[in-house]
Image 1: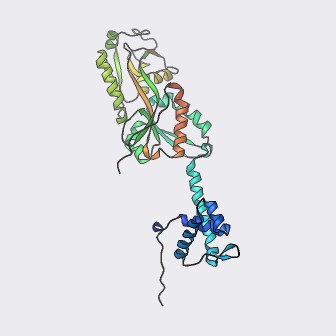
Image 2: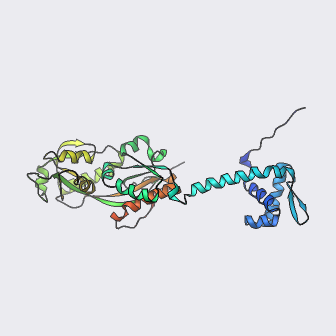
Amino acid sequence: MKCIITVMNLAGIDMNLFLVLHSVIKERSATRAAKLLNVTQSAVSNSLTRLRSLFNDPLVVRSGRGLVPTPRAIELYPLVESAIAQLQSVLNQQSGADPAQLSRCFTLACSDVSQAHDVCKIFEVLSHRMPRAGLRIVSMDYLVASNGLESGEVDAMMAPKQATRGLCWTELYRENGVLIVRRNHPCVSKRVSGELFNSLEHIDVMITSSYSGHTRKLYEAFLKRTRLTPRVMVTVPAFTAAALAVARTDYAACVPRRVAEALSEYLPLKIVELPFHGFAVDIALIWHFRTDSDPAARHFREAIIAALGSNSGKPKRIQRAKAPER
């Protein structure tokens, strides 16, 4: 005698049928089940017909003015109820309704400028809004090396806004460039002329991340437009390294105002306005399209915007580039 086992393929089954089965057994009435599910009674009847065919069992039979489950239905009920409860639990977790309960560790990629000036503000807001969440800061080089946004290794980054396929962004603030020298520099006071700027020996900052390319192009265009030709003596990969070197030498360096203000509290630095105005970069919070609808990631981004939003008078507009090609 052969025993034939039939394995049902879930891909070919309407999962709503199990909601109908659960409701009918629970309510012992097709009418009440239809009201509970917000469907018509005929829709419930049609679903019952399909369920009976699926399980090869009547499942419920009429008794008086109601329906009673068959032994097979009684056997199935706790399994279906458990499955529905677990699915509901998954939806509740995804909803991210309460950011205070999120225990996820979020990763933010940013330059040393943001690490010096912005991260403390972000942490303060994050610890208030999402006290159980963790914060991991990584460099822009790490972001590029790990393909962080696309791979999911990094939740968001702070960088010049990128009109790139698959990325979303919202502007945070505008970053202006200034010149820094040591506090007792023998040649520089509150301002410098173009001639003095060109005569100074400079430390150049060359960030290797591909996301810094836009800023570099803007800076080089600014120098060309204003006919400034700094004599570069040293090149370093970070603004903090430039500031540390400037504090101990007669070199000068062009850095973002935010890092200059942050580091001048700890280093003997003098902040000097550039000979010409016009060098500014719009810094944005950027994330991948695939996390745009994730509630937990959205709470994280909102915390960053709340921490840094007071630095920009512009309304926060979410820009969404096209989704990546599939």
